[in-house]
Length: 148
Image (cartoon, rainbow, N blue to C red; front, side):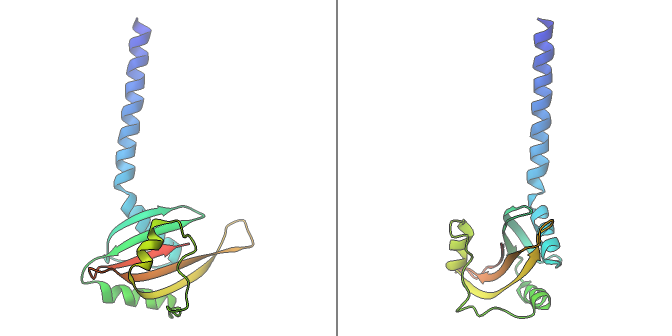
């Protein structure tokens, strides 16, 4: 009987630790995605980003950054200083990840700027392309999509 109680208490402690870890990790996801895109693109968003959503790891990135109201011009300056020129919006393809939910959002928005970079892949003599889309939705809200 005593062993069962000890095992039960250990299980409760493990579960509580997992819940606390999940709470802190989910609370930092926004900051983690912003920091990830800053490091990936070698850019600093300052206080221009309101929120972030998506997923990112070493191989794939799908991040949607909501631009804070009033910072639209500053975001354009940051992006243009980093990437210099925009691709031809009329001729540039929407991201090839056709199944991702962000692709539909990009297609249904007013695309203001598209650029991208080729990044080396660690331990490989190849690169991956990362595209940056600056869009405005039907409500006038500006977003940055980092896809690659």
